[in-house]
Image (tube, one colour):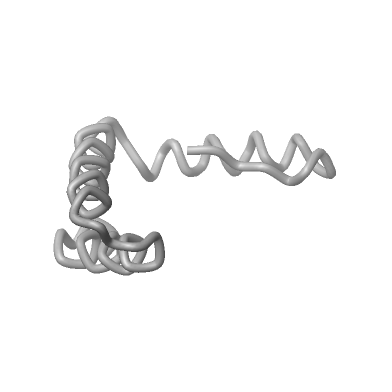
Length: 67
């Protein structure tokens, strides 16, 4: 996960990054692997990038990771 302010406020970016690290713990590494595997399957099945993005949103919602 990255945070950028385009060089305009590096201190704010650092603070936001630390905040987000507290919200998204080590369990997210496995979740990232799951999403990456799904995206790979969808791409290999011929889905377009917008379709993959929509499917990714749906997958994350179905998992309840951000609820």
